Length: 102
Image (cartoon, rainbow, N blue to C red; front, side, top):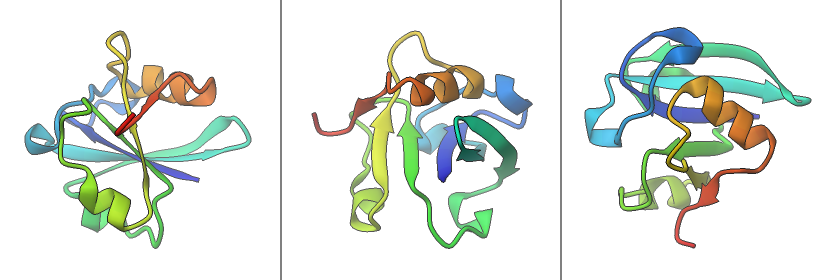
């Protein structure tokens, strides 16, 4: 499954999540069988080349996420202590992210 995250730059798993408007890069995580298969960074979400994104993790629940929902993407929101790609993926693995709109 593919997970998309707006980040401040290409710092690998240490990249920090930011609001969509402040994103300098988009991290695309290929997550299968409880582990990260690949992590790539893209200038915008359209340049990922992915036919389908399963999840997007946003910085806060007040961001506009309707475009993702209209595309059938499940929108998750980080909790306060989760700020890096590594911590977000760990939280995803253990279902410790919030769903948008709840």
